[in-house]
Length: 414
Image (tube, rainbow, N blue to C red):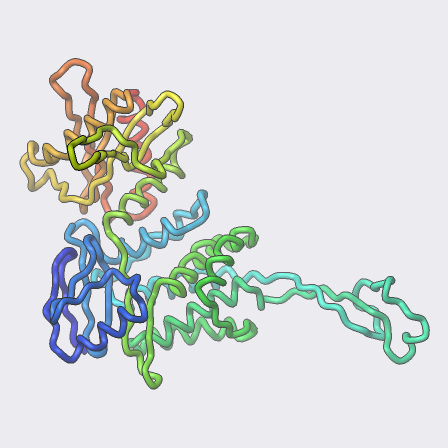
């Protein structure tokens, strides 16, 4: 097995033997963010993750050293949760710095191990049968006295079983991970977990079933606090971990995501959970200018990443935040270089358009930094704060620091 690591937004020259496989992959999966031109393999902008092709593993790492591939997967899992009261204590496992299928397997193993340590939750199912022994509720509308001596009574039994759809989803994800994993040690660990699911049916789920189940599983109640994140991660593995086999041999797999989009959604969801204020992003950008010429009209629009307490009818917002997946390292950068002029102009424009006196730009980092305050020299211009999230810290610490700084610096100045 050979491994090549590249940075996002770069390309790779492949040997001829891999080109037919890539072409077949794209024929069967045209939605993948992959492009091939002769022997040059490229990915859509800001794509990070892992793809295995025959005996070649390609890891596309984040261009930002503050974001490891495991933190990408952690953010991805978090933002795809349907729960607004996400159990943050279940996040933040110490994972390897490299990102291969083993990273996902190890992460999922730890989640499932935590789930099983608190016990599987089952469900009650009702089953109708004829019996001469009353062990449930009699269906009186089906009572026929002449049939009772030889057929018995129609009875509805209610039994508790762990063979629920939720547990079938988790088992299916464990099976998929096991079939794709190369590490014998992790395969043995997954086998240990699977033994706890011996009384759960093996079931294959298609994409549309998972879409439907994902909208319903959050009604499933369990005293086990790990069920929400394990179910969410299971569905993502079943839907988004792409795998293909040839004669029983794993031919390729991929797990690819957009790093910019992932970090933006991660920050917005943290704020949604931690603030009592309304946190939104527009569904569609707003037009602010038109360009007219003899050959037609063009329009320019804008869409801030995060609006706090936005009022549609008045077109105003209490505060505006922008999220940038860029280098932010005060210990190594000149203070004047912490924010680009273009990014500063952008947040000032947002604040002016939305009639707010404070805005912020949020960056990922690998150290803790206090917010930096930018005072614009012109009267009436907004205050701007540069806020950072230490992606090497625990999930809970990141969450608390971000909420405290947005409250203490952004909202306190509105």
